Image (cartoon, rainbow, N blue to C red; front, side, top):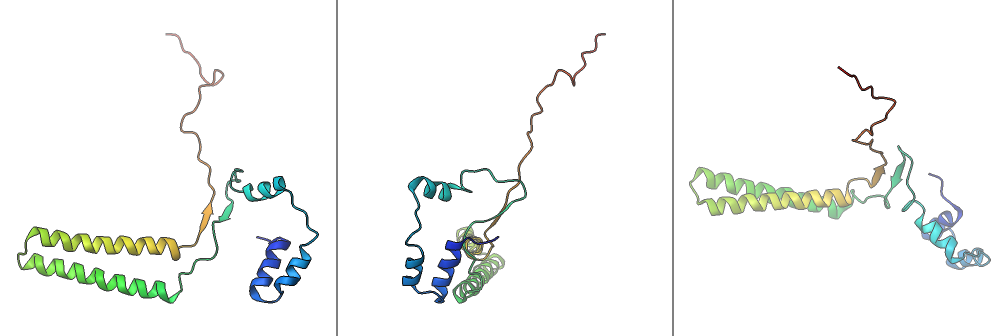
Length: 148
C-alpha cells in the first residue's frame, strides 16, 4: 500500500531524518477543514470495502519481543506444572476438587497464552469477504406452476 505525503513525513520525523520544526514548516500552509478531516478519518471505517481487500488493522505486531517470549516460557512452565500435578494426583487418588482446580489452572494459563498470542503475535490483517444470501428470493419467471 502506498503511503501519502503526510504519513511519509511522520515516518521521517519518527526516524529522525526530518526535525519537528521542519515538518511543521512544511505543513504550515496546508488547510484542512473539518469536513475533509472527518471524511479522511471515516474513510475505510464506514465505507464498504471491495471483496478480497486486505485491510491492515493496526501497526505491525510485536511478536518477537523479549517480553512475549518470556511470557510464553512462563506459560509453558505453569501449564506443564498444573497438568503434571493433575496427573500425579489422578494416579495417587487425590480428591476431585484438587484435580479440577489443577485442570482449571492449566486451562486458564492456556487461555491467557492464547489471548496474548492473538493480541501481540498474530498479524492484524483482515481479508474482506462478502457472504451470499442464504435465502433465494422467489422469481416468477424461474418457477413453473405445474397443474395435475
